[in-house]
Amino acid sequence: MKNSPLRDKSYQFAIKIVEMARALQGNKKEYVLSKQVLRSGTAVGALIREAEFAQSRADFIHKMSIPLKEANETAYWLNLLFDTNYIYIAVFKDLNNDCQELIAMLVSTVKTTKSRNP
Image (cartoon, rainbow, N blue to C red):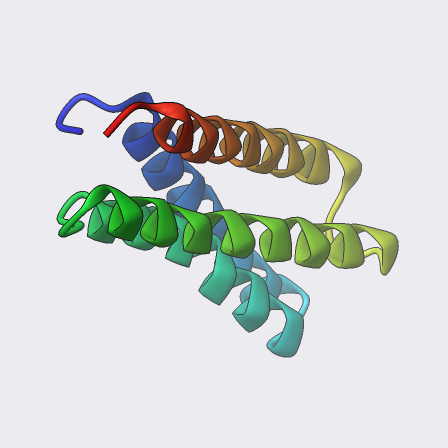
């Protein structure tokens, strides 16, 4: 996975999430929701990196399913932040688009790995 689009996209997504959380905490003095989205949004890439050293195909599938769950949770927090007027539509659309792309990539990775012959 050295030159992996999934790895790169999840890292760039984490950077955007950190920047958004920093802005929420600095400008809006919002700490609870921003910490939740920061935790789940940055976990996606970290868990993908962890999966690189899976011990078996089954372990890889399991490990790649975890960042999928984290990405789904991040989508929830982004929607909540938008619907409660903590983030503007442009920020929401950008991050939500990235999040949905990551979800699609993770689903594809898990399905493809499951369907391969041993």
